Amino acid sequence: MSVTNKKKDVPFKVFAYTFCIFLTILSLFPFVIMIVNSTRSTNQIQSHAISLIPSHYLVNNFKVLTSKTFDPFRGFLNSLIISVGSTFCAVYFSTMTAFALVAYDWKLRKPFFTVIMCILMIPAQVISIGFYQFMYKIGMTNNFLALILPSIAAPATVFFMRQYMIPSLPMEILQSARIDGAGEFRIFNQIVIPMMMPAMATQAIFSFVTSWNQLFMPSILLTRNQLYTLPMMVALLNGDTYKTEFGAVYLALFLTVVPLLAIYFLLSKYIIAGVALGGVKG
Figure (cartoon, rainbow, N blue to C red):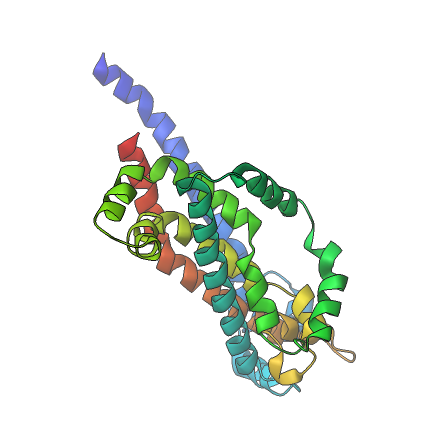
């Protein structure tokens, strides 16, 4: 009977593996097209937008990219500074807020969480004008801190960390640490953060991608060329008045995607570890 069941499972496994391979190819296809087009000329891309054969215009596209009024490497560094800073603020302080909501029993805990959920439903575009006016009055325009510090208030990250922390954080360990004389900040930094690392890694990926791809607020707050982020430079490159160099645009897009892939591969092991830990607990 067991042999028969195994034989019946073979077609299903073949179908499942085939389907997964198809999804993998489908997911990687846009990246392959982007990389190939970054080596092609504008005329080649306009005549045949889809091609799997690389060309020899990579150096020329790089020269076009670096010949503009902005510096793409400076934009890369600016985006990296903003994304790393905002990711750290969002993940660390959101985890601290979730810890306060889960580990402590205080009177306004539920109303406070309700307020956070209400803020979550407000689109960022609604408050953009008021936010710009506030930043302008306090002299924070053309300053990276105006894009980094607001990340401390990240309602979606707080909600995720709270939901992850409720079943995963044993209160007995916290009580034992308090009995041993550990302070609350030490408990949070040395006990809670290592236990929340899978969830923090997941949110770090989302926060970094969101901050890296952000175009609207940086375009409002940053007006100096030396402060432009890489997505702003790609938008300017794509909106050239005379001629759009599509090869240079694809090359700039490739440079934009590289850090996102690097961050994912660096943090994916923590996500896998968290999934495995959840399966063992289950």
